[in-house]
Structure formats: C-alpha cells, structure tokens
Image 1 (tube, one colour):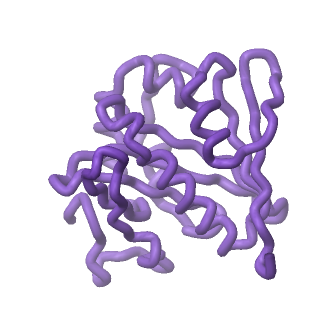
Image 2 (cartoon, rainbow, N blue to C red):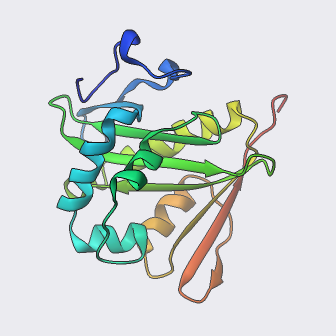
Amino acid sequence: MPLTMIPPADAPAHYPFQFERIVTLGDGSPARVRPIVPEDASLLGAEIEAADEETLYLRFFTPVVRFDEARLRYLTELDYDRRFALAAFTLDGDGMAIARYEGAAAAGEAEVAVTVKPEYRRLGIATSLFGLLEEAAAAHGIRRLYANYLAANDAAEALLAKCGYGDVEFDGSIATVVKELPGPSE
C-alpha cells in the first residue's frame, strides 16, 4: 500500500476520502494528507522508534515511548467519527506529521494532539492538520476541542493560539486550552 493516498478498494469501512488533501506548506512545498488506516501501524511504530527524545517528551510527556502491537492497532484502527487521525507525507512518501482527536461519545468534545518531525516544523503543516481536524470534528457533532501540553512548550502554546484556542489553564506543569466549534447552523 502506498504511503500517500488510499485506493478505494483498499479503504476501511467508512474511510473519509474527503479528507485526502494536498496542502501547500509555508516554504511552497506540497504535502499529502490522508486519514490513517490500519496498515499504518507498522509505519507508526517505526516512526515512534526513530523519534528523538525531545519529540517524544513534548508529545507524550516522557522521553521514551514503546507501543506494543495492540496499542499501535488502537491508534490506527479508527471509527473516523469519535476517533479520527490524519497523517502528512512528502510527495516521496516520507512521514512528516500526525494529528488526531479522541472524543467522548456523548460529551460532544474531543482532545486534539499533533506531532511533527523536527525537519518539518515551522512550515505550517500542524496548522493545516488542526484545520482539517476541526472540519472533521464539526462534521461529527463535536463542538468543543481541547489540547493538553507541557506548560514549558512555547511552540505548542503559539500554535494553539494561532489556531484559535482560548486562554491557557494550568494544572502544575500541564497546560490546557479549549476551542469551541460552531454548530451546524452557525
């Protein structure tokens, strides 16, 4: 299976083809964005294994992360409704970033997160991915997104502020921001 767009015959049930996009980054280069599929589990595992400690620490709040097969399946077998994730790739198929939301079925809210490989940071891919997550969340009745990040992570704070998330609340070293999404008629 290619690392970019998914052929219709290979797509899981309810695969949201409408979220396959080519986006233009801040340096003018293109990136392919598509929803994650179960076949991405091994690729995701390899990316986590290859990630630098800083990236792991900023995303998972620990510098060492190991995911077993069951956890990787959980992260890649999605309902594309309350659990939704996108991956971004270069045109050559190199993984650039991953973004996701995980929502509570009845609560109408979801937690968002993004991880971008260091060499692709500050090009606008995280901003693009958050915009697509918001579009998907709103389409699935989610009206409130929130993000938790390390309070010392100035880049996350700036990104989330740029994406329209509200005032920061602190619980020790963890910061939380919230964004309300418009309803269907707004």
